[in-house]
Amino acid sequence: MTLAHTRSLSRVLMYLFVIVMALLMMAPVLTVILGSIRTTGQFLSNPIGLPETGIQWENYTDILTSTDFWRSLRNSLIITLTTTTLVVLIASPLAFIFSRVQFIGRNIFFNILSIGLLFPLVVAILPVFLQVRNLELINSFWGVILPLVTFTLPSSTVILIGFFRAIPTELEDASYIDGCTTFGFFRYVLFPLARPAVAAIATLSIVNAWNEYFLSLVVLGNADKWPLTLGIMQFQGQFGSDWARIMAYVTLLIIPAVIFYLLAERHIVTGLTGGELKG
Amino acid sequence: MSDVRLFSGLSNAVSASPEKRQAQWNKALLIFFFLTPGFLLLIMFLVVPIGQAAYYSLYNWNGLGPLDDFIGLDNYARAFGETVFRGAIQHSLFIMVLSLAVQLPLAMTLALILIRGQLRFQRFFRTLFFLPYVFSEIVAAYIWLYVYNPRGGLLNEFLSLFRPEINGTAWLADLDTVLVAIFFVLTWKFFGFHMLLYMAGLQNISREVEDSARVSGANEWQVLRYVTLPMMRSTISLSVFLSILGSFQQFIVVWILTEGGPAFRSELIVTYLYKFGIQRMQLGFGSALAIILFLMTLIFSIGYQRTVLRQTLAE
Image (cartoon, rainbow over all chains, first blue to last red; front, side, top):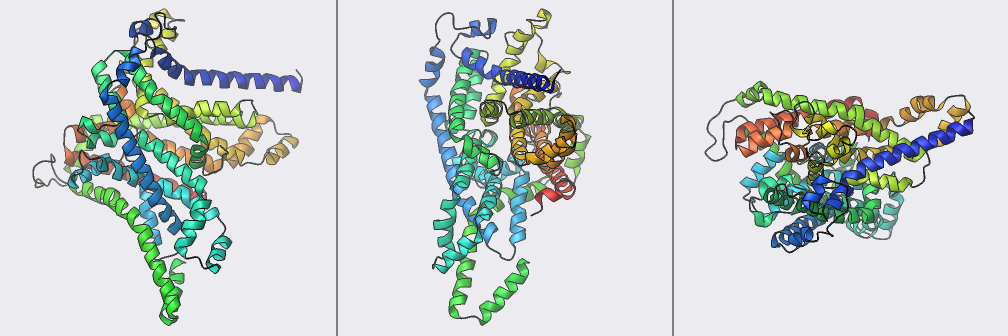
């Protein structure tokens, strides 16, 4: 076999491997979406068939006409948007101080921030729950939002520090010569220049807050306050083995995630890889 | 270094003109206002809770009555004496070993194929492989609860095309298969993240170095083994680090699929903590578990950073 033959053979094998993997990855998702427009009976007797008796829109209309769903959606939006706004407003000044300003105790502050990097909320859930209880924030959105902001801050700040450092110091000196204050430099020069990085941390925070469940589970005892992630647990509790309906609910959660991901992929990729991989 | 600067700053401030003193004062104010909101939160919801948990962990406390039953380190002794807790640690280790042995090599293989293989639709495939990472873990868990459903679930329907007797097998209820079944879900959900890290790392390696190795007569395997992988050392050590931490931090996927069952066979550290600490309101015992998890993570992270990540994260 010539070199060219080996090359094309290995290319075929690579395509084959990637395509098989892609099918394995997507098969569960596609089956779930397909199942959501069929009846549970059809679904369980043949998972990948088409809807023989017409599309079962009831699976969706039953969810979309329930007040529970819309209330959960509203709760998810409140938690997600408030958290993300606070993360951007608080992490940017922190990153500015750590990347540009020297002061005593900088290392102590940075170490505290680093502790937060190591512990996702899931590890600290019980201590945080006790603190939320001491602060009498049980059953309040703030009991979810404030800890969520706290635990999103460290990674967001570190991502921003990387970007702020990359902006040349000459620019800072130049703006001071032009009579800019330190705050002015931050507000009118650095922050606008670092917009891709800010978009990246905002996007990661949106994904994180939208998917949050554990804190809500322990803090929000009252079903009125539940976000969609708990809404689906409650729904599954009610409908047990009515798979088609559960799949419809799952699909309702997947579709916005996919759309958002496709729109914001650039920012997510930038954030996760420190800007190294082009989105 | 910062101290030297500070002292020179101070002496400047003392001897300097009013404008300079004003500038120093402005800088101090700026630092104060920029740090305060963030550190107030970090102290309130990270530092204080951990301190409190360390304190509560010395008491037998159900969270309602007064904190007066001091029992020293009994909660810790109890945790390590429980076979279920020791099992949970073993199961987390099992997930960790599988992740390192299967999930990361898979992520690396796909990253290599996508970046170096110069396939068409590279971005399309990247998006597909990464997509589950943006799904909520709850959504992922429900999708796989269906896939593993003994009758009519996607897995058994597919497998029974080849071996009909397989239909009805309850993978999640079987002591021997439950952990592996959970591992597949975690791989499906998370390997795309590692693939993304590797893709970023690969893009930073200049192809000229690889090409010059080829010119010197190295075959593709040798190029990978002696050139590409060593140059990705920092990316790989970061991904190994995150993967090990992640193995000890799983909760919701396991909780929805099995609640730690059957017979505690898929109990992980966090599901154990939730079940025995929070659900049963044994808050003293739960605090001890939280502190154990906290210390395990801290010791591992410091050790790993001192040794493996030293070059990588050196500021």
